[in-house]
Image (cartoon, rainbow, N blue to C red; front, top):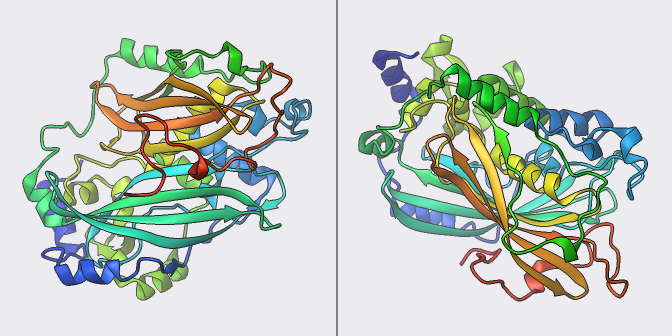
Length: 410
């Protein structure tokens, strides 16, 4: 546990501006429409990389990891977990504009078109969509930055398109306002609760080869929850390994020299270089930005929500849309119950679509990540075409459904 003096020393070391100035916001808005340089971590979807990713999110679905099982599926081989593009680049991560202003990943709205197969390359291009100014109970002025990322394979075929967004906050105001002051840094469970959570985790099972048909799905159907937690440093480190995110020594130093406002010399490491986002691993840095303690990565939680859906829908379905908003922090020791229910059914351009409300709820009963999803299910109607992926359907061209947010920011 960090002492108040240690936390204060870290807070004083972090690069920080007094406020988010109108000029800084104007400079960020001037970037709208600009192409951004993307991250460049895992570029090739090898069998090892795909397995490493699902290990990093705790997904045991055999369609993503068992070649012999997958050989008898309609794909003939394993396919990547829908969120595997995170191996290449995190859309919506805080990394551009507003130097010295802390940021948090806030959400992704994915539209998927094709499956990633073993041996595929993962390429991407990103541009700035919008910059919006708001007022926040957490930190007074905040800025929301939106980007659009397009992922393609080595044949320039569209894999997925995602709108990602992050929120930028004044660190000092976040600390002083203390929105999360009443939230304990660590939740303590009695042994029987830990045992119950373990049993729920071990009971997780994918529907797999048992086809779920459109006609057998009904509004109000509930999804079997997926449980993740209590969150540990091991869980967070596994996600970093699963997405191939690492740099050290001279590589890290060169990155810090190019982007000095994104790194600092941490007194806890004797002045060693660390990224300002190290609050995912260090309590002291999390506390310096007003968070109770170290916490998960947003893309990590989004991936858990995708597992909730792929477990439920079965191998013959296709996840078309996944929208997740990270509304509350998931600190070490918290447990998330990822849940969902069917809210609508429709057939659009020959595609049988199921709409769902999804959410993650912690042990305090708080909804930490609300969202929506759309899944293509096979139909028993022989007049409706079978499908292997979602490339024939563009949701931006479909009529909006009730109570579902638009894909593009308003």
